[in-house]
Length: 133
Image (cartoon, rainbow, N blue to C red):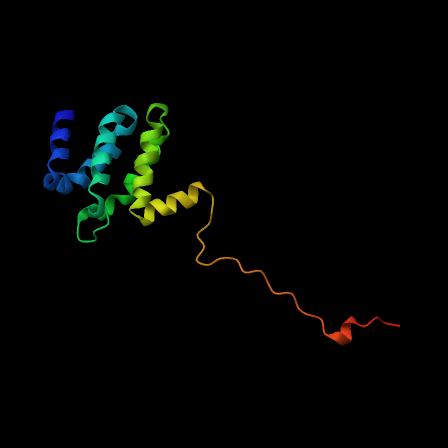
């Protein structure tokens, strides 16, 4: 299986066509737990395609959420912690909405469309500032 996956990862056109199926296999078979080195190779190849993940014409646009989840699962394994972080950061660099949302959830920051503006203090008039007798 590893040899087939390596061959697919080396042929870009076949790899992009099979990307959705590969991600489904990773999730269904829980390969992240059982065979993380294969999962890392697939994820690195997918992230290496760059703009193909953000191209709305390609079917690879649908796997952004799954890739984000897989990167986090890889990061949770002690031996692959750095690799998972690198994949996650590369997904952030591609500016994928799903990855940014996951980061906000991990950071426990709610989605905010605007920033907080403190209310202005009301100025007192001169008449209000005179001492009362």
